[in-house]
Image 1 (cartoon, rainbow, N blue to C red):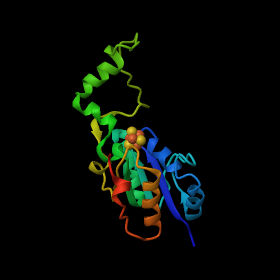
Image 2 (cartoon, rainbow, N blue to C red; image 1 turned 180 degrees about the vertical axis):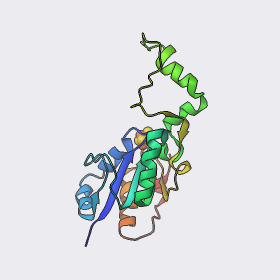
Image 3 (cartoon, helix red, strand yellow; image 1 turned 60 degrees about the vertical axis):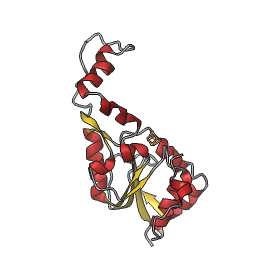
Image 4 (cartoon, protein in one colour; image 1 turned 180 degrees about the horizontal axis):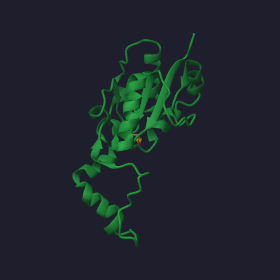
Length: 181
Ligand code: SF4
């Protein structure tokens, strides 16, 4: 029987949610028996190929590239999961939402106390993805099927959700696995 396909990516996240996935420890051997990975830092594929059974999204959308990658995941993944508080509500990066974008640029590249920028210009190379006006949670950009809260969600939470989906069971996690405190 063909294995299920899983893809993962980090948008505007810190990779802590991916580290939590690695924290499933020896269960990773079981996971490898159950799934093949499409795009993921695990194999360093740069593009999602699809079709994919389960996509895991870490981080919200802070720039145009994040939006493109998230839309590609939505197109290719049957089930898409917001993993962690950054994907679910923007997390720490969304603290910039309280400040106008122009002021963020000014602080980061021109007037911040540690800035050294003799050019006096904000970098505008076309290779640099354009920042969005604010950081958006993933579900405000595409439809998400599940949310796994936490910063990061624990390895047990990720394992329980993945194994439920892979075995066709409802993702009905106990309170201990989705609590915030
Ligand atoms: S939710 Fe926490 S661990 Fe996950 S990407 Fe955001 S800051 Fe990192």
